[in-house]
Image 1 (cartoon, rainbow, N blue to C red):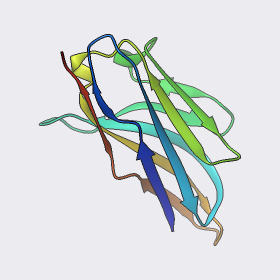
Image 2 (image 1 turned 90 degrees about the vertical axis):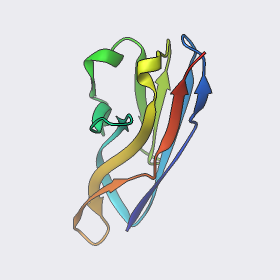
Image 3 (image 1 turned 135 degrees about the horizontal axis):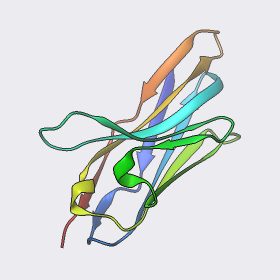
Image 4 (image 1 turned 120 degrees about the horizontal axis):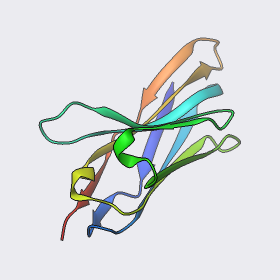
Length: 120
């Protein structure tokens, strides 16, 4: 079983910055990709950013140039640096990881979510 724990959410003014962090733990053999998704009230969850074990990244169009995803493969952690935040970025942010467990089966795990609120 693989667990993900997020931290770093909070309240910030428009134009401000926040850094989200997530650590995966448990019976992990390898992690193919880690990412962040978000869900605003009344909207579907959307993928914000993803990073592979090789360092390739992909971003949702509205966050390109403002958000940066990074990971530490040795520590099984992923971070999301969010700059120039806008009220539209307000949402619950979820970390996720996809990989192979020590038992040999594939896993997809999600964190519990952390609230990000952008408001003056």
